[in-house]
Length: 481
View 1 (cartoon, one colour):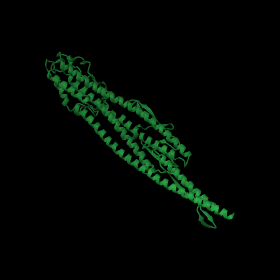
View 2 (tube, rainbow, N blue to C red):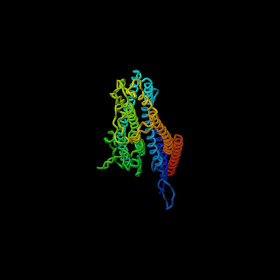
View 3 (cartoon, rainbow, N blue to C red):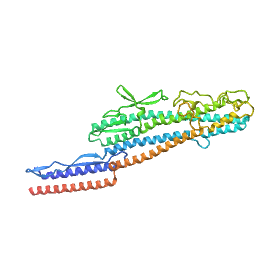
View 4 (cartoon, rainbow, N blue to C red):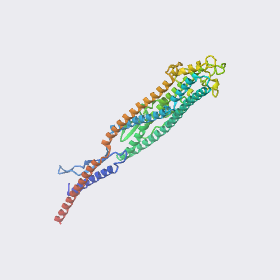
């Protein structure tokens, strides 16, 4: 039977509902600046319906059925994907710019000025081949050119080794994040309906993971997720456990790290398949971009060694008798292939035949005093357009030395420009995705102010209602007494 006490219960339930709404609103306001926080909203439901005399007469108030975090899973997934692509472009832009700083010419320093100085010295000595000062200048220019090439090669090699160390560190970070995400999955599974804060924390970690490696996130229901490496069919995080990656030195690739994944007793090398996030950028720079720069430098060095020596060995030293002398230390060419000149740049230097011995410079074609035939032929190399074998087929064919160097720099510059453009585009797309997420999930102080007013008025109204019921009860008691 429905009695007047039911009115007190109804009013009390309304107070509790309004109180809960106020608490949720207050929590939202308190976390307005908390990164990764998702605003929450209470879901109210009517109480049970009360019957009297077989007829529907009264409701029994309101209850807070749940407190829900305002998330859109599609938008969250879009943010995660955009994070990965943006991170890749950002990291690749930075890596390429660092490489550019090692090969570009600055003022009178760099490989371009060194080549120019070398050929100018050849031009000068061809005018007066017996002048000791010009001969010494040619040796100095050749030594400087060789050391510039060696230094650039060493800088790029050490840079690539540093990138390799970052690969190992990034794999460790991936594993740490995967472990933490799996741990949160377990906590969320153990506290159904009470995990809004844990889900926020896990989502933040998922986005951090996406910045390291391209991932796909799958909804397993009940707020649980699975995380796979994109396009690899590689499980990183399951319902309760993480699947760690590992690294292994590859003797066929400079002893750089390969990235592996283990499934029970099966180990799979996934290095070549990782294409997103910071790890994808590091691997692309280490295994593709920087090796191209090193290979081109090897080809340039090999072209200088081969072309200069081919002419110099046919000339005569200042004594008019000695011939067959190398200008640069010879470097053996390997079998035809993309790396058939590997190591030339690291080893280019003046030959022992001429180093410190200006009289041994073979600038004469006949041995006669004052003859400059070989010096002129060497100077002509500056304009020769078939001096570098850049495709590994054993045939010199690619431009002049200086144009090859210029094109190498220009190609890298164009690649940086393209990557920078992609980075800017991805930043815009990420910002748009973040804005869409904020529209759904971020705390709006204006909206919370309206909610605060609404719940405050509801609380006051229910309080007045309970006072009325209380007064009626007092009147009934007084009348009965």
